[in-house]
Image (cartoon, rainbow, N blue to C red; front, side, top):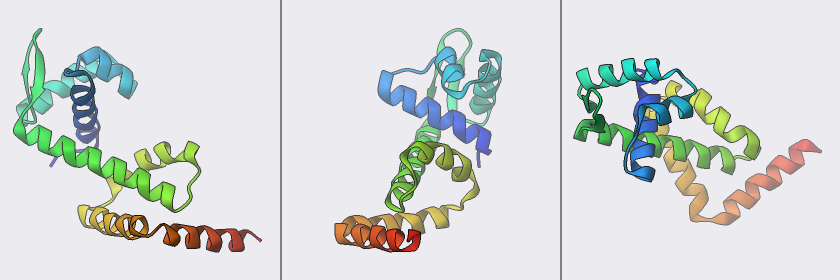
Length: 139
């Protein structure tokens, strides 16, 4: 299992490859707000742990294992964003809150949150009812 730090890198690499077709050390460093040397060290560790294939000066690609984990991490992140939006967390707080909690939840908890998100999305009236409850609590 990857560590939370490894997960952040895998997720970022996956997103970059999906959006640009490639991921460079400089892009990852900028996105994660770390030094390029830190990225290089982590890329080497991810290569050793078979999440990606790395060739010095040539770049890297995710392995099947890395891509599968990347997909799952992006799913988790997007699901938690949806969940926080549904429960009424202010838009400007959603990303920061997701970053704060995503590594601390079990996959079982993520699956249950997924069930709840699906429940609310199946019937928009449920979200309206939740907003009504929230407004009444504020009074």
